[in-house]
Length: 123
Ligand code: SF4
Ligand code: SF4
Image (tube, rainbow, N blue to C red; front, side):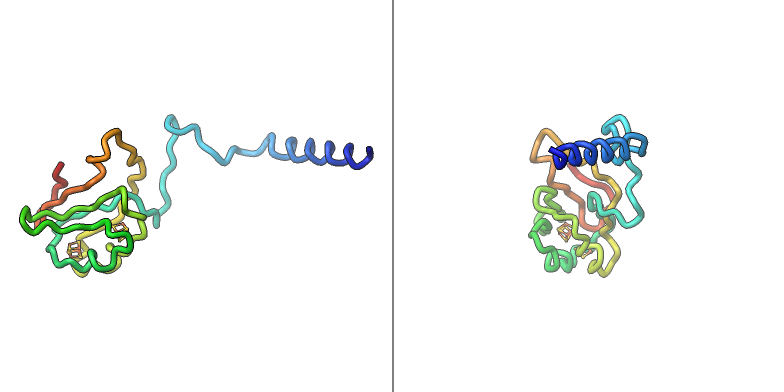
C-alpha cells in the first residue's frame, strides 16, 4: 500500500517537474529547426569531374556515374548520409547540405542527377 502511494507521488513529482520546462520537441512542420553546423543533409554536387573516387568509398552503393549520358547520380533511397563522399572527393565537388525535408510522393524523384562538369541538378 505505502509502496503504491510512493510510486504515485514519484510519478506526480516527475510530471510537475517537467510541466514548466521548455518542450524538447517542435510543432513540425509549422516550426522548423535550424540544423547544427555539422549537420549532414541532402548531398549536393557542383562541378563534379567524374573521377569516381566517391563511388568507391560510398558504403551503401548510392552513387552511380552514367558515362554515356555524362551524368552523376545519387540515390537518396540508399544514401545513409555518412558524408564519406564529401570527405574523399578530391575536387570538393560534393557537399552535405542542411536540407532535411526529403520526403517525396514519387520514389523516382529520390534519384538526384547532376551533369558531370556542370553546376545544376537535372530532373
Ligand atoms: S553520404 Fe555516404 S551513403 Fe550518401 S552518397 Fe555519400 S558516401 Fe554514399
Ligand atoms: S563528386 Fe568528387 S569524387 Fe565523386 S566523381 Fe565527382 S569529382 Fe570525383
